[in-house]
Image 1: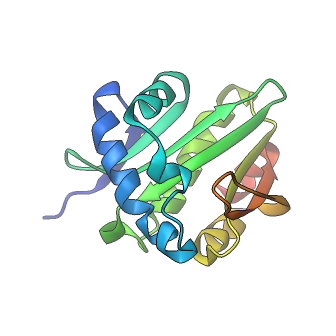
Image 2: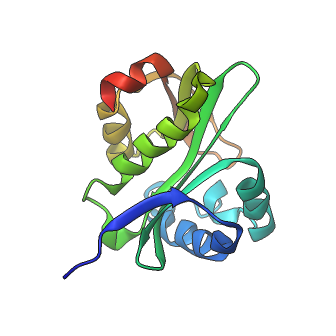
Length: 165
């Protein structure tokens, strides 16, 4: 009988698994852009540990293995920024990314603190864009990241959360 994937808050002891998963999962993005300097690949373990302590960080587990993760934080204006959504390559294409996205939206919307959700992805990342659009996000702008990758910035109102959840 197969195990099911569970989603929960990350713990400090998950840092190394998240770090390794992030490095593995973002290889395809780096290849797509011909750029291995993208932030998820250059982030230090210490920086990730600080995010674990300060942000909302969720993990998807298959048994004891972390097979997906996502992070979010809310700023003073009520914008919930969602970042570094990633799923182990062998688990992609089964809806786990969508489940993680819904879970982090729910966690950030708890207590109605978030007025809107915002995230970004590379302009060439069609599968990511498709996932975000299906979840109700719309493009609101763009920018060039410090690593030179052109990003699309997407948002949706937190009031839209209940509609797409």
